[in-house]
Length: 228
Figure (cartoon, rainbow, N blue to C red):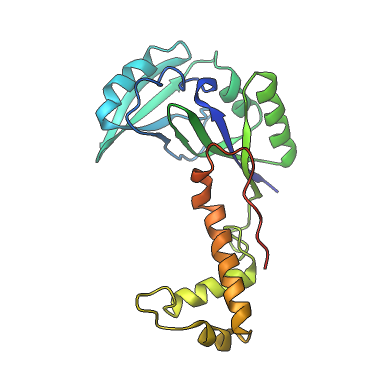
């Protein structure tokens, strides 16, 4: 079973972090790609207002073979970064332990990455390799990848998912509401108090598994697990 880990590292311990400290006018975002090569982070979205300075700074670094602007959408430019073979630290650990970068956001202080590993053993080896290289990795969140055909997604149990979906489809979240907890309890055959508790826990799990990941960039521990 593959495992997905959200990790946070100081910007100074990422190859581009320290050199971009004075260049940023907003966060950098990694463009998610299908992994067809060994390049861990080939594309970055950069605020257009500082794109030219960022591009020049990145292109001048010894760990970068080349950096080019390949697209521009709205207020952001997309840069393509080709790394040299001399990278070390965090990027080297990613390459060595078969990690796939599924998302990443960086500021002048910290970078937050979501990484997918083939197994817990690969994650453990990656973590040890980072520490051996002097990279201070904080584990923000950890969970097993799930089969997209199953109901156990986004941290929700099957009963929680069933209730959240039923509430949404029945108009519970509409303004004004088109259903009540009592009506949902009748529909699902459980008490209204159980509906209230399960809905709160389900929504908390949903936020914890999605939105709270970005909010915990500076945290060193994962959020609580919620169970029905």
